[in-house]
Image 1 (cartoon, rainbow over the protein chains, first blue to last red):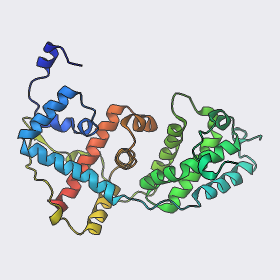
Image 2: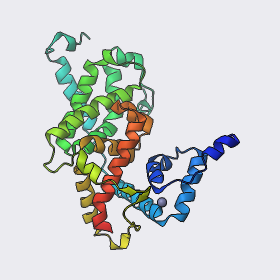
Image 3: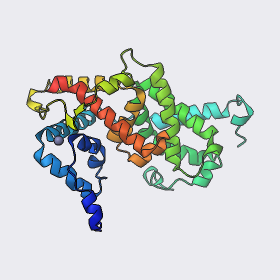
Image 4: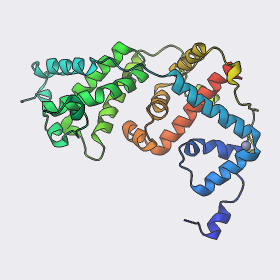
Length: 102
Length: 197
Ligand SMILES: [Zn+2]
Protein backbone atom coordinates (compact mmCIF):
# COMPACT_ATOMS: atom_id res chain seq x y z
CA UNK A 1 0.00 0.00 0.00
CA UNK A 2 1.33 3.42 -0.97
CA UNK A 3 1.29 6.13 1.71
CA UNK A 4 -0.37 9.47 0.82
CA UNK A 5 1.95 12.13 -0.58
CA UNK A 6 1.91 14.30 2.54
CA UNK A 7 3.00 11.33 4.66
CA UNK A 8 5.80 10.49 2.26
CA UNK A 9 7.04 14.08 2.45
CA UNK A 10 6.92 13.89 6.22
CA UNK A 11 9.10 10.82 6.13
CA UNK A 12 11.68 12.30 3.81
CA UNK A 13 14.25 14.06 6.06
CA UNK A 14 17.50 12.08 6.06
CA UNK A 15 18.16 9.89 9.06
CA UNK A 16 21.08 10.73 11.31
CA UNK A 17 23.56 8.04 12.38
CA UNK A 18 21.88 8.15 15.80
CA UNK A 19 18.46 7.52 14.20
CA UNK A 20 19.93 4.62 12.23
CA UNK A 21 21.38 3.18 15.43
CA UNK A 22 17.98 3.38 17.12
CA UNK A 23 16.34 1.39 14.33
CA UNK A 24 18.89 -1.44 14.17
CA UNK A 25 16.85 -3.97 16.17
CA UNK A 26 13.71 -3.38 14.12
CA UNK A 27 15.75 -3.42 10.90
CA UNK A 28 17.32 -6.78 11.68
CA UNK A 29 13.90 -8.12 12.71
CA UNK A 30 12.61 -7.00 9.33
CA UNK A 31 10.07 -4.96 11.24
CA UNK A 32 10.67 -1.52 9.74
CA UNK A 33 7.92 -0.07 7.55
CA UNK A 34 9.04 -0.10 3.88
CA UNK A 35 9.55 3.64 3.68
CA UNK A 36 11.69 3.76 6.80
CA UNK A 37 13.69 0.74 5.72
CA UNK A 38 14.45 2.47 2.44
CA UNK A 39 15.74 5.54 4.31
CA UNK A 40 17.72 3.35 6.69
CA UNK A 41 19.37 1.57 3.78
CA UNK A 42 19.94 4.83 1.90
CA UNK A 43 21.85 6.18 4.90
CA UNK A 44 23.94 3.00 5.18
CA UNK A 45 24.78 3.15 1.48
CA UNK A 46 26.71 6.38 1.90
CA UNK A 47 27.80 6.20 5.56
CA UNK A 48 30.85 3.98 6.03
CA UNK A 49 30.82 4.43 9.79
CA UNK A 50 27.22 3.23 10.20
CA UNK A 51 27.88 0.32 7.83
CA UNK A 52 30.94 -0.70 9.82
CA UNK A 53 29.08 -0.36 13.11
CA UNK A 54 26.22 -2.50 11.79
CA UNK A 55 28.73 -5.07 10.53
CA UNK A 56 30.26 -5.31 14.02
CA UNK A 57 26.79 -5.52 15.54
CA UNK A 58 25.82 -8.42 13.26
CA UNK A 59 29.18 -10.05 13.88
CA UNK A 60 28.49 -9.86 17.64
CA UNK A 61 25.17 -11.67 17.24
CA UNK A 62 26.79 -14.34 15.07
CA UNK A 63 29.59 -14.86 17.61
CA UNK A 64 27.11 -15.15 20.46
CA UNK A 65 25.21 -17.85 18.54
CA UNK A 66 28.40 -19.66 17.68
CA UNK A 67 29.92 -19.53 21.16
CA UNK A 68 26.73 -20.57 22.95
CA UNK A 69 25.95 -23.75 21.03
CA UNK A 70 24.88 -26.44 23.49
CA UNK A 71 25.14 -30.21 23.20
CA UNK A 72 21.73 -31.93 23.15
CA UNK A 73 20.34 -32.29 26.68
CA UNK A 74 20.79 -35.67 28.38
CA UNK A 75 18.25 -38.24 27.15
CA UNK A 76 17.10 -39.16 30.66
CA UNK A 77 16.10 -35.58 31.44
CA UNK A 78 12.33 -36.07 31.12
CA UNK A 79 12.40 -39.37 33.05
CA UNK A 80 14.32 -37.75 35.90
CA UNK A 81 11.84 -34.90 35.98
CA UNK A 82 8.85 -37.25 35.99
CA UNK A 83 10.39 -39.27 38.83
CA UNK A 84 10.99 -36.03 40.73
CA UNK A 85 7.38 -34.95 40.21
CA UNK A 86 6.06 -38.31 41.30
CA UNK A 87 8.08 -38.16 44.53
CA UNK A 88 6.87 -34.67 45.33
CA UNK A 89 3.27 -34.98 44.26
CA UNK A 90 2.72 -38.29 46.03
CA UNK A 91 4.40 -37.12 49.22
CA UNK A 92 2.07 -35.69 51.86
CA UNK A 93 1.43 -32.12 50.68
CA UNK A 94 3.20 -29.41 52.67
CA UNK A 95 0.01 -27.35 52.62
CA UNK A 96 -3.58 -27.76 51.53
CA UNK A 97 -3.11 -25.74 48.31
CA UNK A 98 -0.64 -28.24 46.97
CA UNK A 99 -2.87 -31.23 47.66
CA UNK A 100 -3.58 -33.37 44.65
CA UNK A 101 -6.63 -35.53 45.20
CA UNK A 102 -6.17 -37.73 42.11
CA UNK B 1 -0.90 -47.86 20.25
CA UNK B 2 0.81 -44.66 19.10
CA UNK B 3 4.57 -44.68 18.93
CA UNK B 4 6.54 -42.27 21.07
CA UNK B 5 7.19 -40.14 18.01
CA UNK B 6 3.55 -39.90 17.08
CA UNK B 7 2.64 -39.08 20.66
CA UNK B 8 5.10 -36.22 20.67
CA UNK B 9 3.31 -34.64 17.73
CA UNK B 10 -0.20 -34.92 19.11
CA UNK B 11 -1.53 -31.70 20.53
CA UNK B 12 -1.68 -31.82 24.32
CA UNK B 13 -5.25 -31.77 25.58
CA UNK B 14 -5.29 -28.42 27.38
CA UNK B 15 -8.45 -29.19 29.33
CA UNK B 16 -7.00 -32.45 30.62
CA UNK B 17 -3.77 -30.66 31.45
CA UNK B 18 -5.52 -27.90 33.36
CA UNK B 19 -7.66 -30.39 35.27
CA UNK B 20 -4.44 -31.89 36.64
CA UNK B 21 -4.46 -35.05 34.50
CA UNK B 22 -1.10 -36.66 35.22
CA UNK B 23 -0.79 -38.27 31.80
CA UNK B 24 -1.33 -35.00 29.98
CA UNK B 25 1.20 -33.38 32.28
CA UNK B 26 3.72 -36.16 31.68
CA UNK B 27 3.35 -35.58 27.93
CA UNK B 28 4.02 -31.88 28.52
CA UNK B 29 7.16 -32.75 30.52
CA UNK B 30 8.40 -35.05 27.74
CA UNK B 31 7.74 -32.51 25.06
CA UNK B 32 9.04 -29.36 26.75
CA UNK B 33 11.94 -30.68 28.82
CA UNK B 34 14.72 -30.45 26.23
CA UNK B 35 13.93 -26.89 25.18
CA UNK B 36 13.11 -25.60 28.64
CA UNK B 37 16.28 -27.16 30.03
CA UNK B 38 18.32 -25.42 27.36
CA UNK B 39 16.82 -22.00 28.11
CA UNK B 40 17.30 -22.45 31.85
CA UNK B 41 20.85 -23.72 31.36
CA UNK B 42 21.69 -20.68 29.27
CA UNK B 43 20.55 -18.42 32.08
CA UNK B 44 21.96 -20.27 35.12
CA UNK B 45 25.01 -21.67 33.26
CA UNK B 46 25.39 -24.74 35.45
CA UNK B 47 23.97 -28.15 34.46
CA UNK B 48 23.06 -29.46 37.90
CA UNK B 49 21.45 -26.19 38.85
CA UNK B 50 19.58 -26.09 35.53
CA UNK B 51 18.20 -29.58 36.10
CA UNK B 52 16.96 -28.75 39.56
CA UNK B 53 15.48 -25.42 38.42
CA UNK B 54 13.64 -27.24 35.64
CA UNK B 55 12.22 -29.88 37.97
CA UNK B 56 11.10 -27.18 40.38
CA UNK B 57 9.52 -25.32 37.44
CA UNK B 58 7.36 -28.29 36.43
CA UNK B 59 6.40 -28.92 40.06
CA UNK B 60 5.34 -25.30 40.53
CA UNK B 61 3.51 -25.30 37.22
CA UNK B 62 1.55 -28.39 38.24
CA UNK B 63 0.71 -26.96 41.63
CA UNK B 64 -0.32 -23.64 40.13
CA UNK B 65 -2.37 -24.91 37.17
CA UNK B 66 -5.40 -23.10 38.57
CA UNK B 67 -3.63 -19.75 38.19
CA UNK B 68 -3.11 -20.16 34.43
CA UNK B 69 -5.00 -17.39 32.62
CA UNK B 70 -5.94 -18.29 29.11
CA UNK B 71 -4.74 -15.00 27.60
CA UNK B 72 -1.29 -16.50 27.06
CA UNK B 73 -0.18 -19.73 25.47
CA UNK B 74 0.36 -22.44 28.03
CA UNK B 75 4.02 -22.83 27.10
CA UNK B 76 4.56 -19.05 27.46
CA UNK B 77 3.21 -19.35 31.01
CA UNK B 78 5.45 -22.36 31.68
CA UNK B 79 8.53 -20.55 30.36
CA UNK B 80 7.69 -17.49 32.45
CA UNK B 81 7.81 -19.68 35.58
CA UNK B 82 11.04 -21.36 34.47
CA UNK B 83 12.78 -18.12 33.58
CA UNK B 84 11.81 -16.44 36.84
CA UNK B 85 13.31 -19.32 38.74
CA UNK B 86 16.37 -19.42 36.52
CA UNK B 87 17.00 -15.70 37.06
CA UNK B 88 16.70 -16.13 40.81
CA UNK B 89 19.18 -19.02 40.67
CA UNK B 90 21.53 -17.01 38.44
CA UNK B 91 21.49 -14.18 40.96
CA UNK B 92 22.34 -16.63 43.75
CA UNK B 93 25.24 -18.00 41.72
CA UNK B 94 26.27 -14.68 40.28
CA UNK B 95 29.89 -13.93 39.69
CA UNK B 96 31.57 -10.96 41.30
CA UNK B 97 32.15 -8.81 38.25
CA UNK B 98 28.64 -8.60 36.82
CA UNK B 99 28.08 -5.26 35.14
CA UNK B 100 25.58 -2.79 36.52
CA UNK B 101 23.29 -0.41 34.68
CA UNK B 102 25.95 2.35 34.61
CA UNK B 103 28.45 -0.06 33.04
CA UNK B 104 25.88 -0.95 30.39
CA UNK B 105 25.38 2.78 29.76
CA UNK B 106 29.10 3.29 29.45
CA UNK B 107 29.33 0.48 26.85
CA UNK B 108 26.77 2.15 24.55
CA UNK B 109 28.07 4.17 21.60
CA UNK B 110 28.02 7.92 22.05
CA UNK B 111 26.82 10.48 19.54
CA UNK B 112 27.57 14.11 18.88
CA UNK B 113 25.24 16.07 16.59
CA UNK B 114 23.61 12.78 15.61
CA UNK B 115 26.94 11.22 14.58
CA UNK B 116 29.00 8.51 16.23
CA UNK B 117 31.86 9.93 18.26
CA UNK B 118 34.03 6.89 17.44
CA UNK B 119 35.13 5.58 14.06
CA UNK B 120 34.40 1.93 13.32
CA UNK B 121 35.92 -0.65 10.98
CA UNK B 122 34.37 -4.04 10.26
CA UNK B 123 36.07 -6.69 12.37
CA UNK B 124 38.54 -8.79 10.53
CA UNK B 125 37.97 -12.47 11.31
CA UNK B 126 41.55 -13.19 10.22
CA UNK B 127 42.89 -11.08 13.05
CA UNK B 128 40.63 -12.75 15.55
CA UNK B 129 42.10 -14.70 18.42
CA UNK B 130 41.93 -18.43 17.99
CA UNK B 131 38.33 -19.70 17.70
CA UNK B 132 38.07 -21.48 21.05
CA UNK B 133 39.70 -18.52 22.74
CA UNK B 134 37.22 -16.23 21.03
CA UNK B 135 34.31 -18.39 22.19
CA UNK B 136 35.65 -18.21 25.73
CA UNK B 137 35.75 -14.40 25.49
CA UNK B 138 32.18 -14.29 24.19
CA UNK B 139 31.01 -16.62 26.94
CA UNK B 140 32.71 -14.49 29.55
CA UNK B 141 31.20 -11.30 28.15
CA UNK B 142 27.72 -12.84 28.31
CA UNK B 143 28.42 -13.97 31.88
CA UNK B 144 29.03 -10.37 32.85
CA UNK B 145 25.67 -9.10 31.59
CA UNK B 146 23.10 -8.31 34.28
CA UNK B 147 20.56 -11.15 34.27
CA UNK B 148 17.73 -9.21 32.62
CA UNK B 149 19.96 -8.39 29.65
CA UNK B 150 21.29 -11.92 29.45
CA UNK B 151 17.75 -13.31 29.56
CA UNK B 152 16.68 -11.14 26.61
CA UNK B 153 19.75 -12.22 24.61
CA UNK B 154 19.01 -15.87 25.42
CA UNK B 155 15.39 -15.64 24.33
CA UNK B 156 15.88 -13.47 21.25
CA UNK B 157 19.31 -14.32 19.85
CA UNK B 158 19.81 -17.88 21.04
CA UNK B 159 16.32 -19.32 21.33
CA UNK B 160 15.13 -17.13 18.46
CA UNK B 161 11.84 -16.28 20.11
CA UNK B 162 9.89 -13.38 18.65
CA UNK B 163 9.77 -9.99 20.33
CA UNK B 164 6.09 -10.60 21.10
CA UNK B 165 6.69 -13.93 22.77
CA UNK B 166 9.73 -12.66 24.67
CA UNK B 167 7.63 -9.77 25.96
CA UNK B 168 4.88 -12.17 27.06
CA UNK B 169 7.33 -14.51 28.81
CA UNK B 170 9.07 -11.67 30.66
CA UNK B 171 5.91 -9.68 31.36
CA UNK B 172 7.35 -6.49 29.82
CA UNK B 173 6.40 -4.45 26.75
CA UNK B 174 7.73 -5.21 23.27
CA UNK B 175 9.41 -1.81 23.29
CA UNK B 176 11.25 -2.75 26.48
CA UNK B 177 12.37 -6.05 24.88
CA UNK B 178 13.84 -4.18 21.89
CA UNK B 179 15.57 -1.59 24.07
CA UNK B 180 17.13 -4.23 26.33
CA UNK B 181 18.17 -6.39 23.42
CA UNK B 182 19.81 -3.42 21.70
CA UNK B 183 21.61 -2.32 24.88
CA UNK B 184 22.79 -5.87 25.54
CA UNK B 185 24.09 -6.40 22.00
CA UNK B 186 25.82 -3.03 22.01
CA UNK B 187 27.44 -3.79 25.37
CA UNK B 188 28.63 -7.17 24.05
CA UNK B 189 29.95 -5.51 20.90
CA UNK B 190 31.95 -3.06 23.00
CA UNK B 191 33.29 -5.83 25.26
CA UNK B 192 34.38 -7.93 22.28
CA UNK B 193 35.68 -5.01 20.29
CA UNK B 194 39.01 -4.78 22.07
CA UNK B 195 39.75 -8.37 21.05
CA UNK B 196 38.60 -8.04 17.46
CA UNK B 197 39.58 -4.60 16.25
ZN1 LIG C 1 25.75 7.12 9.63
